[in-house]
Length: 584
Image (cartoon, rainbow, N blue to C red; front, side, top):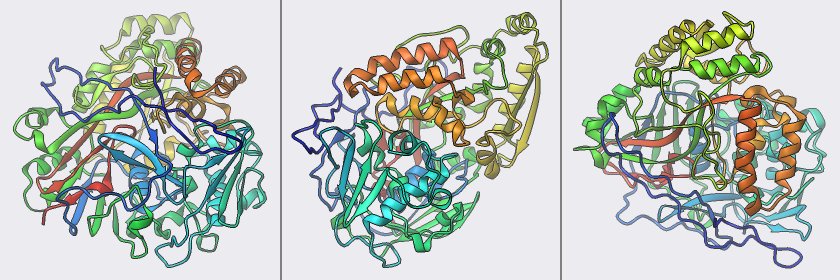
């Protein structure tokens, strides 16, 4: 199949591309909760444009001014650019607050990678082990300080102190990354990245063809060493390089962003900035928010929500209110994570056989507009996807409690205890209802269930603790690919790197056989990797069963009648926040 290529031309080359498959177009939901046709799945793609220049073109008819309110049910644990690795905080930070070496831009419904703080998409050496990025002149932080190459090199080093919650690509690929613990513990001398004048230079242990995509992460956003706090609190008031800066942040409750006076549109080919401010409200009752947005009275007319649409509202968003709803493609596979260190394989298989997908979906108000049953860990739009189904792994049905009990008995594990966290302060009561169904059904299948209710603002931190009391539903609860290739799924999700750095992965796996097989695949070209990752997916599930695939996510974006130019990013399943403007 066709795919975006990384091409070397001469001794030192920039990125090139061949024609890529079209990125999926946005679609509106159709049908009802009963037997609705599933939206089509388009091939994922992210082309490359190393010559893109600012300013980004403005949308026709766009108006400047006003405030957008984004109200949704969950809450970021923090806003530290080195530590964040969640869908919502990523969308907020990369589109609005922090610039990186590269960035994504939407063109005609397709995602394209363009230079951001760098002048191009990087120059790679003939052996593929050195990447050089040159920083644009004249970029400033919101506090007026100049952005330097040293700031970016320091940010990359700092990211090693947060690999428990952040990405670990840099640990696996950068030279000396396996032993480096960040500047506070290991010092600032690190072989994997350096700054020379206005250049940031990455030195690799092995070829990394997709490094320019990683260069769009907040872990590569500049950080002033003099301003940093050596803690996650740094992000709460971090100087901005994007079009907006933080005015106030109350963890678990609210974030307000206002214009960054030092952002210059002419230097930024990826972002526009129509609004005067954004207000994010966390931990909201999603059903009430959605009802208000559909009615669009008063401030609800300039409010956006990205929670899955509730089943009670499907008729409206597929009928009279369809122009307020986007049902687009997402990058995420949601799964029930199981700790393989604590739950034996035969018990994991019994849990898969017992899992009550349909009743949980009913309690959650889930719809075909928000999810498609999953049976694999790679989503269907990724090159190399293999369509396979193992026992109990279909994402549908209510499980077989009798068979599960028999499996537990055969394994000598009757009444096996399952321990997990759930949100107990969801104002809509949906999380509590889902938990009650899950607990009741699993107990009926012969398990003992210890459910630990915690506040929404605390749950992300607790489920990410490697040595916490839980043995299932630990972080990650799912995975959204970071770029459209499975090399952004499995290495960060099942390699031993995460466990060695006190992070979590699917199954909390740290198996040399898994690491070796991934190393073999990563040595191949991007074109050759696709089919091998598909085989790896099936082998991993047959051999280890670290998680139960639940559903392939769909992007659901609901917005008030005065919210304009709402676009779905199909590679991240989120609205492109900086593209939005409002009628006043």
